[in-house]
Length: 338
Image (cartoon, rainbow, N blue to C red; front, top):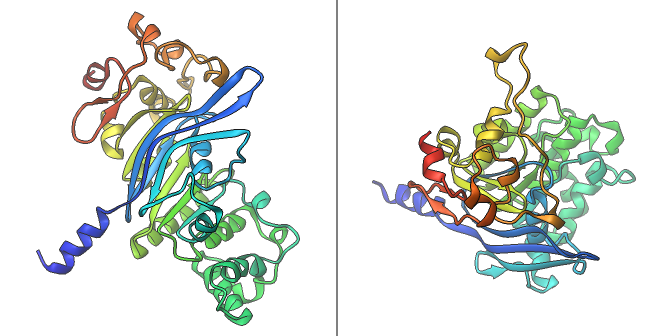
């Protein structure tokens, strides 16, 4: 193997974000409610990690803690989130300001409410460079805004750079959010439900754009979603969350081809199939747990069709079922082999 290929492989395998035992709780009259209750994951350069789960599973709260988006108090955050040797969870603002939005950036799920309705698009994109690249002139910032708008597929960008968010469609605003996310060439782009409320055509275009950017620049992607089809097509690794905890993690193809947790199977079974035309959709029975009243034992046990006595009394340990595939189920091997 040529030296350049060896160096490229080493770069791709380099861990740039290492999250350990991340917990996020909120103080309430009923005590501390854990929205995130112990998450471990790593992200390597150029990798796409999917975080999958229903609403309320802790997906957005976990990345919000890393990005300094949660006010503390009421949020209480413990654990570790190491970005290239810098601890993000307790670093001073002077340090995190240089990382958040620059080295680690985020695309929010609702673009129209995330953009400032009173500022022109060019001004909002240019603000990033004004803060993080203060040596750039006003003209250079405007030119960069036009370049980024063109890169995300907005036609006539030199004219539309002076438009306001309400003058764009939902899909175009989402593209602008991506332009903001990639503006400074981040190491990691966190995309929180980036295709919510978009039609399937625009969704496919946006995910292709993110994939192209990742391959061209070596940027890592963290994709947060409840859509298992989206992560199946666009991620390398997958972490499935439920009730604030990871219940299954591993290479995306392995998790989907050989799921080892009943919750993952339930999510997969809920996907509409062509051969099921005219039949009722398969749904996971029951409702997600109240975080203030988590059940004893396995958090999924009240909804699990395979639950046994041990599931209702004992919290399952993370089980290694081989080939970097892990499951928090007492019967992970049995479920995977069924």
